[in-house]
Length: 145
Image 1 (cartoon, rainbow, N blue to C red):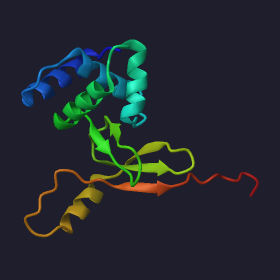
Image 2: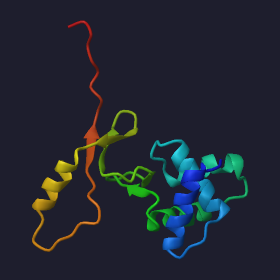
Image 3: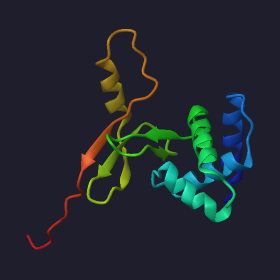
């Protein structure tokens, strides 16, 4: 897995801002998350990464994920009692967890939703991130009605 030139620049700049060096393991993990935007867990990333980088360890995966989160390249997605998942979409958005399939979907919301939420915070509170998660099932459409 390789990053496109544009993402390679974003990757390098984000790590340098955090005083970290780009490594082939970090780049590999980042490219895996970008190439299949399905909000994988660390174990899923480990399984995928071993296909093209067989010597990588689970500890290295966790270290790379921590670095990518700290440098702002990906974000963690947490649902109650679920494994942490990782998302490359850094735009403000929500997530929907389908309880039937375990699939997590990005839900685009207008900026006005986030602005409204911020207005409800106590004075002087400055959020760095707002996480909105929905849980449920995807309703099946009955075409016979």
